[in-house]
Length: 265
Image (cartoon, rainbow, N blue to C red; front, side, top):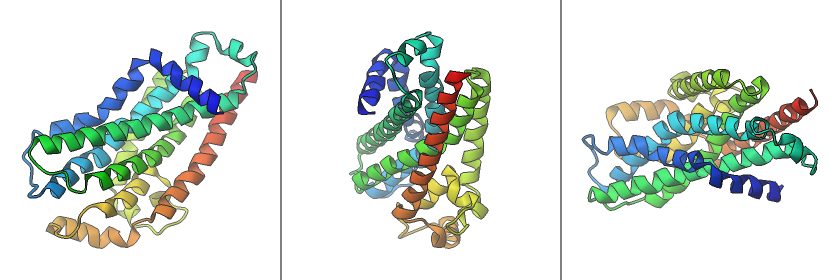
């Protein structure tokens, strides 16, 4: 498996889109940096910048980027008519699909890491000391894992439609918008931990985990009211990543099964 992951990663040298997409994470924080800031301390400036990465870039840019890249990686051998050659090595097609998805996990982490580092750089360029930056930086890497798992239901649909790129784009756009809207739905954010949309959907799951790491020592009236509603429903590391691990295992298995089954049709 490690050799497959290594080979898939080395192929990316021919795919500048992979590396260019990693820098998309800075677009929203960079644009926000030109707007008036309400930060009065370095810690507030860091939180303001990182919240753009966590709540906008991760939802609106990372999810569609992973799905589009997944479609590209999963169907490149079929497009280039090299899949039959791989099968004669032999390479298990299910393991190949899992290796490609793990490469996309690397991309997700890289996406959030680049966005975090450049966001911290923007904070310093504006003259603030980046207080608390590294803690939120690693929170962002944790969110990368949750969002990567969150793309898998959509990737499964893309694989099932088997190279229908137009359908894939439609599914991606719809899934991204719905996931973002649901992440701001108070009824979902105030559901108890369990088998419900507020726990299983990536949008609410991620927000119920990372939102607790913001500085809430001096909240505005609006934030105080929101915290009063959702703070009892924050998720621990074990809960958030336990759900992500279980969902990831299930959907990786399904993606590998569907991808492998297409070989025999």
